[in-house]
Length: 277
Image (cartoon, rainbow, N blue to C red; front, side, top):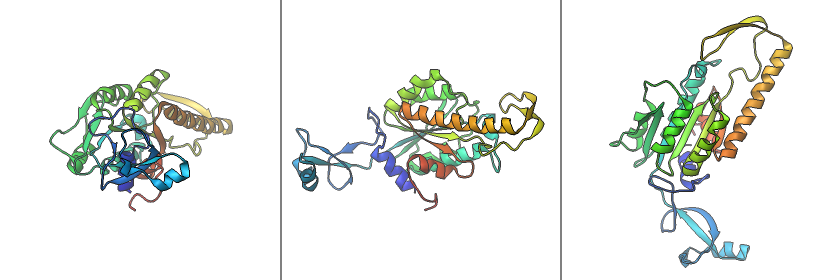
């Protein structure tokens, strides 16, 4: 499965508009994996003409070959109090599982980066699996700040890097739209959106005391059939709105399933199957 994830990144399903060091690069060459077909342009190597495709299209079609070049894999993981919630386990546990799966795609010359708050962890002397292991185990001493981390990613990551952000995105506002679009213009961006642990139905009934996961503030409220229905509707609306927001900004996204962070990541790339396949 990790080979499929790596291949998807190299093929650039959402190829950045600007390429740079560490980016997936489509080239014409010998002995590399076929990536796609495109129309002929002046200066192309005629040896790369696909005559069968040309006959079907009626215009010269070129075989584009993808060289296996180094990737830069960067990750931002939400560690705020709201991510500590969950039913069988916390959403943060699933988030870290998705992040480890992301870094597992790193091979020989790949570079890994971890952004925690305003700090960037990018071991210059490490590459491939060693770099991935280092970044996956970064503890970090800064509180999670979504906007700050996204702003750091804009300036710290080279064009063409692949960025994974795992969060519930409760802090995301309309003012962040330019940042999201700016990131997708330079990077290959993926978002895993932490689902509400009780999206299938709020189990509370009657007069209950609820606590804000972030601030700790408490409030006593009544929860009846109407309130449970409105809660379920609100979670569905919010999840749909977030998915559309990321799509509009040029990101790929998928819900983060509390039960399986790895599968959630593969789903964002349209990769089916069990994580251990």
